[in-house]
Amino acid sequence: MRKDSILIIGANGQIGSVLTTKLQKIYGESQVVATDIKVPKYKQAIFEILDITDQNRLLHIVQKYNITQIYHLAAILSAKGESDPLWAWNVNMQGLMNILEVARSKNLDKIFFPSSIAIFGADTPKTRTPQQTITNPSTVYGISKLAGEKWCQYYHEKYDLDIRSIRYPGIIGHESMPGGGTTDYAVDIYHKAVQKLPFTCFLKSDTKLPMLYMDDAIRATTELMEAPSESIKIRTSYNISGMSFSPAEVAKSIQQHLPDFKINYKPDYRQTIADTWTNSINDNEAKKDWNWKPAYDLQKMTTVMIQELSKKYSTTNNKELINN
Ligand code: NAD
Ligand code: SER
Image (tube, rainbow, N blue to C red; front, side, top):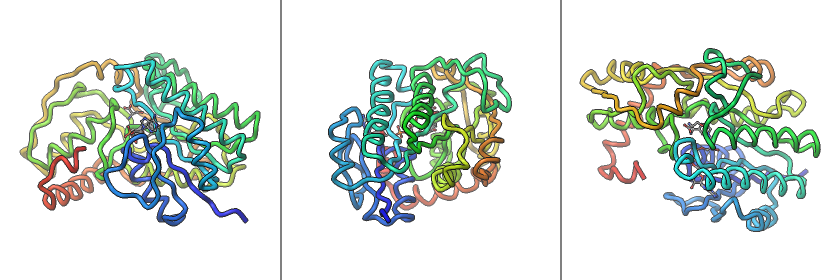
């Protein structure tokens, strides 16, 4: 029997860094190859530089480590992508196509590709958005994720590639900083609150978006990847839901712990992006097919975020260590 050998692409990012630790625990450090376009802040057991637009380098790493599974986390997110749409399209689409081709030609066992709530658009039903619905994304990021979902389904149907995907909502965790999304405010707000600083929000007070606590996102990912192949009925990408809240609601939940916390609002171009996304997600298919169930609501997440970040800021004076 072949031993699983895992390749993580975009391993230094907000999700990749936490997922790498989790997969090292599951498979053992010697079985997990972390890669990114940049060197990591913390030493990894096995790390290689990989620009995912370079197919030859990807193939070299897959062969060097006898890779059997890929977790593809590298992408240019919604807000950052709008500053250079053609660059974002190239990284997001060429990167995915390189992985699909290497996975097909090398007969890899399983691939994970994260999609996003950014595939939805202004004419998508806003509340409890169903799995199958109008999409019509407005950002280059959303367009690339929607096209990516379709390519995943195509490679599954045409080549029997076992590729699995989740449409992550905005992800919030204390372990890492986000890298250029529209939902990033919901991480930054906790960092400001525990440092006793006021927070200026780039979204309006009542802009409600779907969100998910990092522990739930990582567990959803590993549960989806461990599910028997025959139970995975959706080969584009699964809706999953954790919680939904607006900036005013998360501020209120923080004020229950830190009553002096202050928020003000200065909406910018990211408001236009958020206005096209939905408020909440219907994840019945994920619940039915692989028993998805979130564990965190806003209140529970706020308690943990404040506890963990307070510890972090009290044990390091180096703000840059946390924020870079
Ligand atoms: P991130 O921006 O924090 O991390 C992305 C990582 O990819 C970075 O470490 C970056 O250095 C790396 N990268 C960028 N260009 C690269 C290239 N050409 N080659 C190799 N690596 C490159 O993003 P994240 O929040 O960790 O997101 C991970 C995945 O999850 C992405 O596909 C993203 O679209 C998806 N997602 C994230 C969220 C969220 O809220 N964080 C929500 C929905 C979907
Ligand atoms: N959190 C992501 C973003 O805001 C959604 O994919 O870009």
